[in-house]
Length: 184
Image (tube, rainbow, N blue to C red; front, side, top):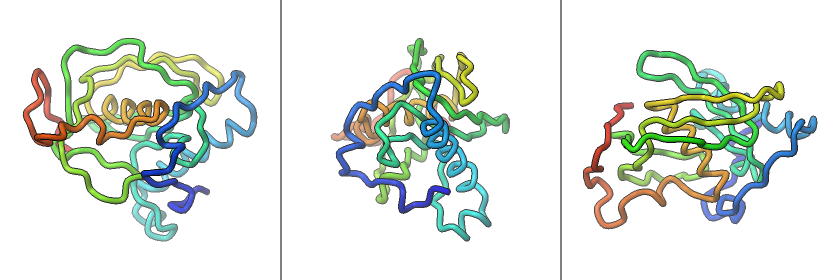
């Protein structure tokens, strides 16, 4: 199982490079990597396992964060109604998004960034993502709220973008026009 030791930190060049598409059907090695990402995210949310294995809790993880520059992400997150969105995806791509924005009032964090970086991170309020599952099925996801924010954060990792790149440098808590705040 992945541990915090496997997660590379801010400043590592892999976090700033654009990840390569995963050739499909996926190889066993790529499937194992994607399974490991999902296992980490699920285990990190279990207080006993997280404490025992010294895992920092996360709701998403991208392959570049474990120094694998390939387009793979795992998210395991609930929305405001406690609906679970749990996906391990190859080659996720945002195919459409809302004009309206959203942001987490608490700001965003990242398993690759140890310090807290305060500020609002503007995201699309709703996104439609096309991707391929571990089983090789092509799916289309329509997400809003926290699941939408989470998947955008992880897809950014595939493009070498860090969450703090979106924060207004001059005024980190400046109101975001046409945006819905998400309490977390």
